[in-house]
Image: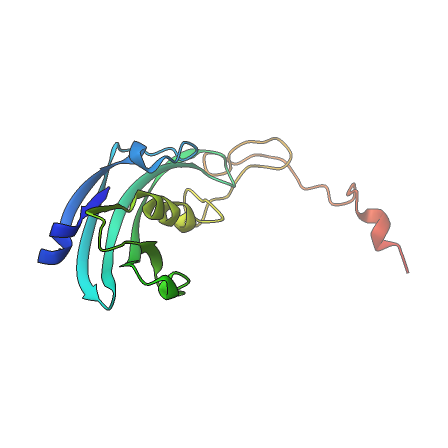
Length: 164
């Protein structure tokens, strides 16, 4: 998604953009919708512009406990600094894109793609109370109860319990 200097000079006030999910270049992420909605607000800053906003992303995930596919809708906030000041490149508060006075537009897709990747949860669960799969028979405990009993006596770790 390109942001044009003329738009920055006028100022973006919660302007709605629609981004193609394919344009982010995230081949390993399975988007459920072809369009990502993105709302951006811009402010002038010393030596550049701040872009603040959020995007709504729908992703197809696989539950880490029960292995069922589910849709996850996330609202991701972002803050980007467009600047020509080299000293601000290593800013901890904002992602920084080098944007000189000669540039007419800037592509923020690479930064938005990073936000999508960083916002994905480490533990993907279909629901917070997902029961997962039975370790004995493999049935999905969210869909049915099984008659399996946990045999704690035949544990591979039993030998370690006898060490003094």
